[in-house]
Image 1: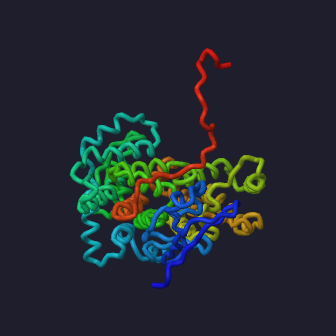
Image 2: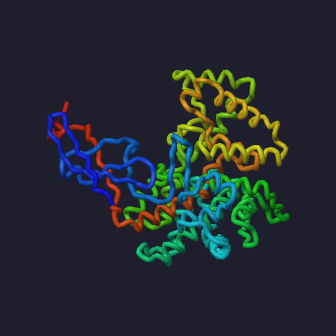
Image 3: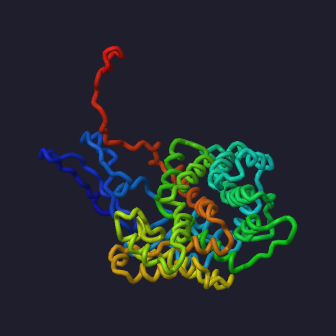
Length: 433
């Protein structure tokens, strides 16, 4: 170990203060440890959106936005998407290493045998309107799981944390499928232990009791890849929400429900739904040029959804993989000439060639392609964010477990830069103008 390096601050009045350790991770930028800053200097940092603030130490996911790199536990996402299934990736995120054959079989069996939900949860759905957004239903029902599984809520007990992890990974797809079935008036389809995780979800989503569901392995693999690509993504808004909720000691079901609620926002998990809405608004290839010009005009009020990313400043690896999957699915279903797909491909071509987009690095992102794939598979727009939520559940759980076991973790309590009134006295109501 080398000598500890420290940083100090200087202020406009010429004073200096603090002796802040400079920390280094495995890869990525260094971090200045400012935990003692307020005590030593009487000042706080101001960082809206936490763009330059590391809120925790984590060994789960790493992103290099400039280079277009995404690693799960050190493994490149493109290798995982090509060589692993979703439950292998779940095991990796939870336990830090890829499973061998025996470990995978045991893990898969545990998850699949937890996919049933308590029968009384069915009653919850009757309280929702039939036209409720599936995400509203999912937030409520996932949060309600804590009312049914009291036997796994001791956060200090590792076995309780593990069983909660299995339950959440297994039951979220069941609840998401039930939310969809409820909105379209079809009976719930119970899980089948004979199918894979993703095939089981598709059967619960699209199957009906009147006939045998036919598994299409191309579509199963495509959806499984969507799950892998969305399984975790560092300290994004919903993950930070899960960690913040968990820092108070809230139970894991409540924390994941909080993450789902945050994910619902159109700037986060709702982006692929917004992308499809945009394609419908454009309507036809002949109007692409018109909307491209609108996108370049800051005063038009039109925003090109599905392009660019808060973190990635390159063609993100998830988008490259999703583009490949998009072509596979449309080829399998004979939809290469689909109106929206042709429109999307023209948008993609322009974004990759037009100087305006290239200079600003507004490349197609994963949401651009995943919405098209899900639509082609028959998944309605309002279910897209539910798909994202069930895929991200394992990432949230892994992050929550890491936070719970971190000895440096404290209850979240951001500071603020107060800009309201200074102290003043209350004037009797009879004297107020």
